[in-house]
Image 1 (tube, one colour):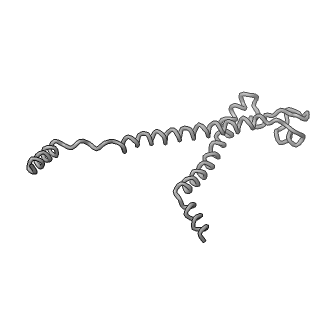
Image 2 (tube, rainbow, N blue to C red):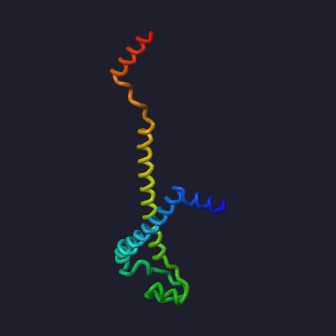
Image 3 (cartoon, rainbow, N blue to C red):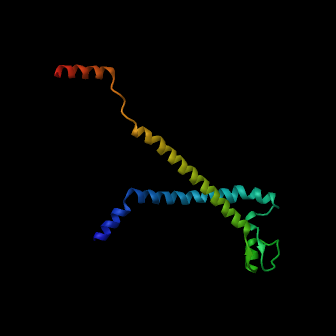
Amino acid sequence: MAVLQEFKDFAMKGNVVDLAVGVIIGAAFGKIVDSLVTDVIMPPIGMLLGGLDFANYYLPLNGQAANLSLVEAKKLGAVVAYGNFFTILLNFIILAFVIFQMVRLVAKLRRDEAPAAAAEPAPPSEDIVLLREIRDSLRK
């Protein structure tokens, strides 16, 4: 029973729950970026490079015809699917940039909060100083 209690304590810590939420949101965001790259960015690039779907660009290694789709070419033998690789690489670069910007923003917010928390209290007003002097002189 002690092991179950330890596991429960571990699983319910704030950091573990925050990590789980981050992973779930990250997976959903990854799908959004994948759609952005596949459906919005890569079609114009493919059009500029010959009008084909960029994910279908490949180098045939077994003498396949160059006009086949990637799926058909793979059925006939090995291919180097560089178009698909570039699509996934662009996905990664966009995700990495967005995560970098988020980490940068959080670090900036933490830097802005730190001086406010470490700031010294304001000096007492003149009234307070005067009252303290009066109190000290009465004690004497």
